Image 1 (tube, helix red, strand yellow):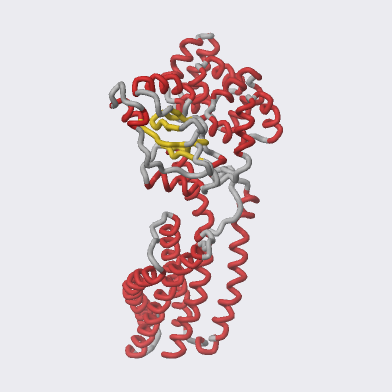
Image 2 (image 1 turned 90 degrees about the vertical axis):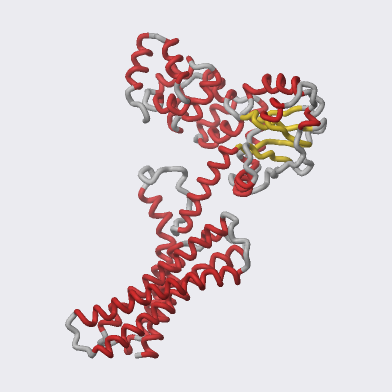
Length: 457
């Protein structure tokens, strides 16, 4: 809550019946701040305040209310009040809100919607949640190509109260096909007698309702758009995706990729970390961790196979976890960087370019880490009371440094190339999660370390 001091003041104004003062206070606030204040009130108080607000402000404030407050308002706000709010909401906001409701609440509000609103919701349900058709906005400004600039401005003034944005106006022909667009700036700067057809831009960037939401967000970002038109197979305009939708998409996809890379499965259902039940978190996190724990049977078998060579050599046993852990971290770093590059479209080169780039990076990392491994081995052997000749101590330290270098090189290449191959196979690269890459590099790190030590000592 941004300003808790307003809550008692709002309640006092409510008790005193000073409705004009209440509307004045809330109107001066940003809808988000007004909603934050109302979130702290009782459902009956929220219903009273919502009934006092002008329709446009009521719609904007309602969109910022907490989901549970919205549902309480719908359940007890009265049919007329709820109907006015739902019908005043923009189409995409209304669809998102209705989709969030429990089935029993949704059944109650369904009769309150207009036929057009119900048809819109049914049409959206034909698309997956990650497709553009499920969240596009149908509240866009449309102009005829024959209108003059003066008439177009008057037409926009008429349409503006019910449209989500008028910064872009879309020009359609008699069949509803998108033939151009123009910005509000272009319209204002035009001469009064210029026609829309003369002013409009015909280099149209659009998408289809079946397109993935990530593709829509990428187009908005790459072309610096305020809104992206959505057209059907016959180029008829059916909706737009606004820049604020693109921001939400990027945030949602980032959270999803983060969860996948952390090895978590399932959905968090929009809940915060503290709100999500413990058992649901366990169900999301346990599968990958359990699989990887079983995978360690293979790693353990590799180590067990070299037990005879390591028997009695404490230094080699002590330093093996360091080499394996560093290899895992290097592999995870490489995998994370490549996954991000693939997801953001920044990996346009071939596999060989990826290998060459990662090889140069890993060689430098290997040089640095091998020096640290040599120093660790030499210091542990020299200052822990072990009575070994300096020549032998140095030899062991060099061997461990070589093992570290080889482990780092292979881990970096493995971490970098695995997501690339997965992308080629049309699988989400984020599924190659950090725990999985760590497990693979632990296995290869153990094998390389033991082989190098066996051969050179």
